[in-house]
Length: 115
Length: 111
Image (cartoon, chains in turn orange, red):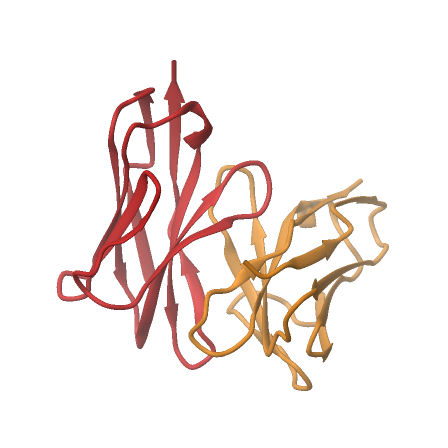
């Protein structure tokens, strides 16, 4: 399958700081990238959908000013958690899709801990 | 609101047993049903199903979709301890192929 690289795999930051997570499709061009959040023992919850060169579409209840998504190229999307709080601590996963109606491939995920 | 429901939530079986995992969905503008296996980190892709009644197989795993009854099953035969994981199903919907995930089934295979 296609390779999606997510970085960093884990990060610890202080409350009030911002953290950037990168998601790269290594061997295909990702027209669409998705960002998910997963709490312990729960399923993945979609946060936002981003298409290259356009603004991300956020799911209901997700603050777009807090979770900044940039999809500047066909191989890179970034999620920035701004002014992080301990309740933002979670597992964040990106997935990338090439052509429409093909499977999405996941990055390795990023475990964020805010202290 | 799009909804994907999996059952059972968790399952413990002995090595060698056969298991069937269930996934039902109620979504708008359904496109396909996907199965993933999640161990410690991100999910890994297993199957993508778009047509009813056509079984997809990969080794000891197989899956089938029923678009009339809005459900899918994932079968694992001759289970091994390495099959222990959370199995997620997801429905893709809309033009952006957005994935709506179910709650997952936590499978534990014991010796």
